[in-house]
Amino acid sequence: MKPPSALRSPDDPPDVPGFRTWRGIYQFVFAFFVLCVLALVVIERLFA
Image (cartoon, rainbow, N blue to C red; front, side, top):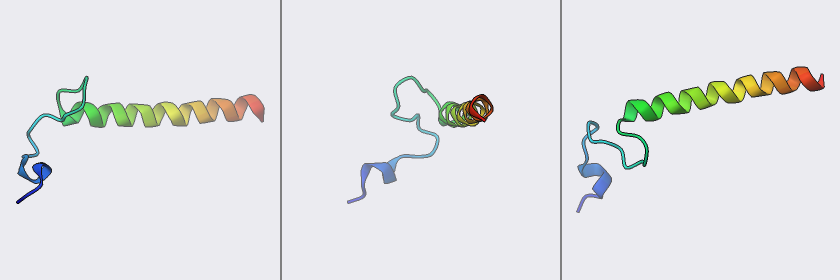
């Protein structure tokens, strides 16, 4: 018997609350990464 994740196609919506598409999840993760990098740059300049 195959696990449930193997039965799903890549076009199925993700089981993540607040996101209807995988593209939305990828955009959120990328934006969060950029925000973390910017926060590190600001912290570095404040305490350097």
